[in-house]
Image (cartoon, rainbow, N blue to C red; front, top):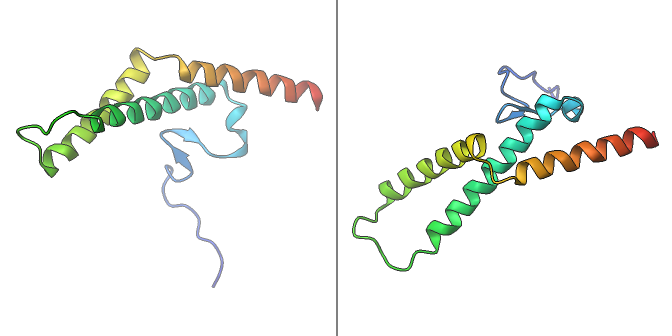
Length: 107
């Protein structure tokens, strides 16, 4: 009765195409995806913060428009991370690569 169920979807255990298993850092491609995903999330948070710091109420502000803006901001953040990155994802990827090399030489 307490036996866990096996995942039925190949996307379970992944976040944005990034594997959550223990071998995730061993793959350079997966490390690059993680860096890009991190940059996308960071950029999205930055855009959301910029939107919340508005100086006046807009003429057409409503819940539907707000939801649409949030979805558009998420897509803009993903696009920015993929095509014109800020560099924070690359810095994180480089840091993780260096820490992997250090752990590999110690072990």
